Image (cartoon, rainbow, N blue to C red; front, side, top):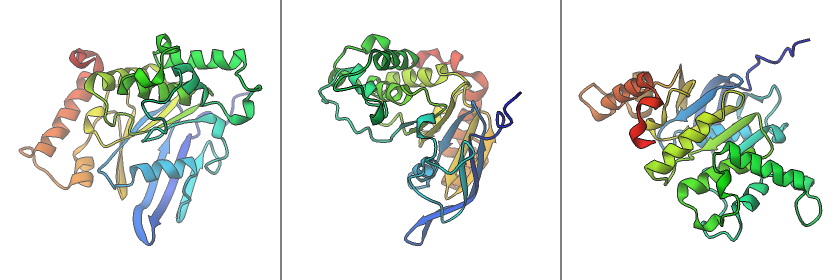
Length: 267
């Protein structure tokens, strides 16, 4: 018998309103994210992107409206969700190997004494393989580049084999090569994993992205990787074709049409 929830949204928000101290941040946000989708949330700083992610995680509760994750209130299925926060909680000089950092993603209740069970170490190696950095397992976390460290944190989020991966600004302070590597990692995770990534960078859209969502207090969504003029107007106001922001929309459209394989210069 088929599972009746197979095609139900992984994330569903219905008319969600949220604010701080009577200052509105999100106003009647509605959004459905289906299983296997790669959704990118874009918008200006302070527009509510991270707040939206925190509502999905259950760190905030909406003032009104409804949020559902896997059909339940947020926070009910922590083992099914991997999360890469905007600011990693590990300093670059953190004294641990890459494998040890990834093992930190295991729930505390699964410890087997002071060390790690062989099955847990196998899970860490598999997560590193999925992140494309298995060769770094025994390296010191402190000697890695910014892009490598970010991919380690992605592997840490993958160690529990989640069904939903949430990433908050994974490209912050990462050089172009590191960004390209993280792009490749997220693309290669495949459609079996629902991915939601927050970014303020309009250049992140790629062929693998199935949905772009623009947030600036209210929400505009679309299908495919294109940044639309409506999204740009929401984020930055109305701009013509002779304006840099209007030109950015055209570039985003062209990049989506060409696809990532034709932009190998920065891979």
